[in-house]
Image (cartoon, rainbow, N blue to C red; front, side):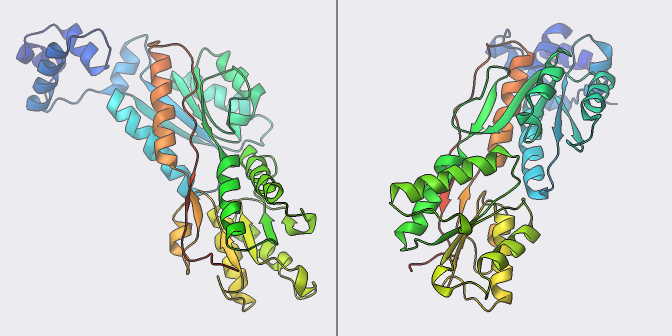
Length: 341
């Protein structure tokens, strides 16, 4: 027969309430008692029914990840990181993909939260960058943690996990400059995303720091997609342009764009990296599936998501006051898609 919480309590020689506190990872249990309960759980192979626990009490043990992002690799990394924290803390995860541009999106998410009795939300762009949406969620008495681009939180609405895209973009642009490139193209991601804005600022900052004149003709608007990279590279490397004005390197706002730019370069018989260096951003599988493999900036999305979920659960349990986690700075990863000019 399947072990029950009563069996665990009897085996460990403690009360049912104590077992519940250990399972819920509450801090008020002595370590020696916690060890006894965890040993009993392991020996009896006890598996708590989290759904029943949610229904049985007034306290919710589930959080939600609400997102609108076409990049499957990014979403998978986020889900993996959040799930890892949930398993450690005895919480369930509700995953809710949706369209942030829908007129009734706030009502849709509100209805979902009410029906699921969710205690907290992890938000990534673009939802994390929509203050009106965040305020509506907070009005439901739901805890929120946001993952955002920047070097500091834009407000005090919620705790945030910050990703310093600007510094990372400056570093990766500097890598191109150190390799002798001065005509560096820039293919942007979605204009409304702060990550695009911050990466663009880092690109501009590196040019300025090296007294390289900014050329707006080298900047291509786009979105976070392979197709955007293909079209962006074609625009930058067009045969109709003066060869002396063509870029010798391209900064792509993410690896998917960079993979598209590399594909377009192949179609135009441009040798990578001998004739054109290409860099991406995020260190997603796209950066390792191309040939040559892409120089990029390693953004540890799984770790970022895990920290965000852990912070959210801490807020739900009211174990500490609001704070912003230490920011992440994606690190340069040099591969074969860049070389000296």
